[in-house]
Amino acid sequence: MLLEPQEMKLSNGKTITIRSAAGEDALQLAKHRKITAGETYNMARYPEECDYDIDKAREGLTRTAKDPRDFMVTAFCEGEVVGDLGVLTIRDLMKYRHRGYMGISIRNEYCDQGLGSTMVKIAIDQARKNGFEQVELGVFSDNMRAIHVYEKFGFKQYGINPRAFKLKDGTYRDEVIMVNIFST
Image 1 (cartoon, rainbow, N blue to C red):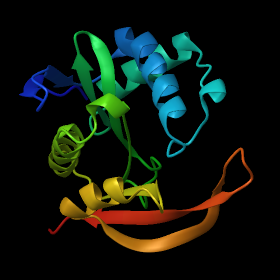
Image 2: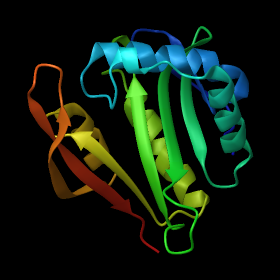
Image 3: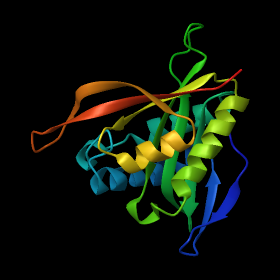
Image 4: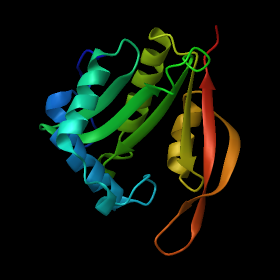
């Protein structure tokens, strides 16, 4: 589904447009994901693993835009993607349809200005409207800034996946598993 566009001002004075990414944003989104993968190890992939098939990405974004429940919350500054969040149905089977999975990435220069909180709030509100009963996510255990934001919006930790991520230097990071169960 597509969200109604909205604007926000960052503390640095820049105006951010928040809307759903669509098929025509595939190249910008691929660029964003490669940049964020290089800025921190807290992403699922390294920059060299971000070689996207743009046509396939465009098809996926178009499919999400037409989906009645799945959605993207994408932040644009001066036409460039600076934040990306998606909430997708975990599996399209009856026993799973109540569950959504959320992932987010924000460019470093746009962090600590309220953008992440705004995007997560929009996502939680929309997930409820779309009929999800809970949203789940995984986060690096040492990413305290992200964990704080998630907890602020009702996510609770319910598990640890030990050594979930192996970095290039051979060290491991645990993954904190979190869920936000909406009251009925």
